[in-house]
Amino acid sequence: MEIVVVIENLPLVVNQELFPGVPLSIEQFNELVRLIYQGPLEPVPWRGAAAMIRDCLRSNRTTFVLRPASARLPAFMVRDRGQGPEVYQDAYNQQEVFSRDPFVGLPPHRVVSIDDVMDVENWLNSDFYKQFVEPEKIRYIVGADILVEGGAEFRLRITRSPEQGPFSESDKALCQMLLPHFKLALELQSRLEVTETERGFYAKTVSQMQVGTVVLDDAGDVIDVNDIANGILSRQDGIAISQKRLHASYGRENLDLQRIIRQALDLSIAKDGQPVNGVSSNAISISRPSGRSRLNIVVRPIMQGAGLQRPSAVLFIRDPDINAAPSHSVLKQLFEFTNAEANLSLMLARGLTLDEAAAESGIRKNTARAYLRSIFSKTGVQRQTTLVRLILGSVAAIG
Image (tube, rainbow, N blue to C red; front, side, top):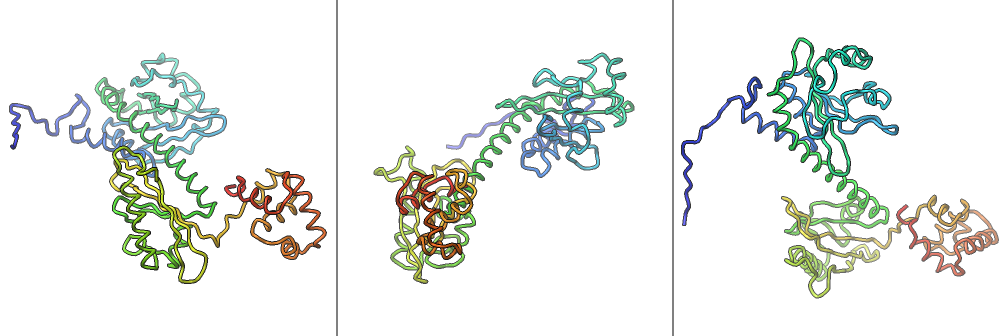
C-alpha cells in the first residue's frame, strides 16, 4: 500500500534573509551548518566556517580558539581575515599576552559583545586594547565560550572595525543559533582525536612486536594493512592479496584460510555479539614455497558499527623468522643492566649461545660468563633459557 502525504499552504522561503539585516538565506544557513560539521576534517580546522561567518556578518575577522594558551603550550587559534584562513603565529597566542585579554570568562554557550560585559570607556582606554586590539583595526567584538565534555573550552570571536559599526541583535542571534552545532562538532572532534590517538598507539605497539595486521570489511575485502603485514604479503611467499582478497599459496590451506575468515565475518554480525561455541578467533599456519618457517595467522571478528566501509575482521600474521627485538634502553632501565649486559641479553634472546654471543661481541668467553653471572643476579634467574623467556616476555619487546 502506498501512502502519499500532501502538505499545502506552507510558505516557501527562498533566498530570504533569516535575520533582518543579515544577508543569509535558508540555503546559506544550511551550508554554514555543513561547514561547521566538516570543520574537524579540514587541514585548517573550521576554515570554511570561519570564512563564511566573516562574510555573512560583514566582519573583518573571525577567530576560533581551539586550545587556550597555558604555561606548557601556546594557544591554537584559527582566524580568517579575508586573505585565507591561517593559524595564529603572533604574540597573542602566548600565555603572558593571552591571559591579559579581558574578554574572557563569558557566560557559557551565550553570545555577548564586548560592550555588554565591559564599560566602553575603560575598554577603549585599556592597555590591552591600545597595544593588541586597536592596531588590528578592531573596535567591536562579539563572542561566545563553548564548553565541551572533558572540560575543553572553545572560543568564538568575531570582530569589526570602527567604520563597520557595531553588531546588531540579529547578528548575535545568528551566532547563538550556531553554537549548538559548534558544540556537537567539537565533541565529535574530541572523540575522533581520542580514537585516532588510541588507534595509532596500538598500531605502533603491534608493529614493534613484529605482528602484521590485515583489516577486512564485511565482504572479506582487504581495507587496511600495517607495514609488517605489507612486507610479508608483498613477498607472496605463502600468502598474498589478489583482487582485494587474501589467498594462500596452497589449495588446501587456502580453503582453510577462507573458512576461518568467513567464520570471523559471520561472528562480526552475530546478533548477541557473542562467539559461537566459545570460539572468538581461529588460528592457522601457512606453508611457504620458499621453505622458510610457516606463517602463523590468527583471525578475529570485529563487532560491526555503522560505518560505510565497516571493519569486520582482523587477521594477525606473524613470521617466526622475524624476531621482535627488545629495546636496548628499556632493558637497561628494567634490570639496571650495563651496556655490555644489555647487548649480551639481546644476543641470547636472538637464540645465540653464550660462545656465539662472545664471538660476535669480540669479547673473551670468560668475560661473557662474568656478564651472564651479573645478569642472572640482577634478574633473579639461574638458567639461560629462563633468562631468554624473561627478556622476550618483558615490556622491552614493545619499548
